[in-house]
Length: 134
Image (tube, rainbow, N blue to C red; front, side, top):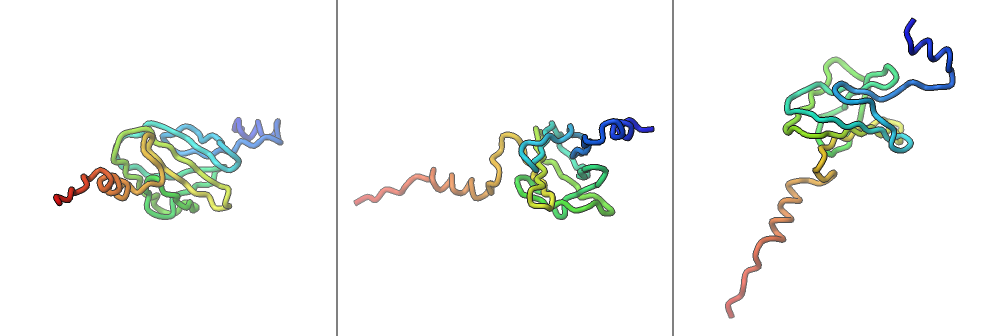
């Protein structure tokens, strides 16, 4: 008999369900309905699937950093997560809306910022003001 099954018989009021994914420690609950995990990830491509209570979930669309991704039950082929830079990544699952969502972020990078827009705003602010030679 499996240990988890035996434990559930002995302690029926306790829940053993947890969000998990390959290459990351188990998610920890931050607030009611928000779960996070962090780990060092190296460059490369890997499938991204997340499990909760023996139910498999995967992003419904393309995987992008700092964007909320809807999760759906797993289908044939898992979406591929292309990691372009080594670093410490955070995965956050949010279940407060009823449909689980996932946010991936890289430590040390601002979240929810369009890098192209941020760069162009900085460049415009740093550009010298032309002097009028009157």
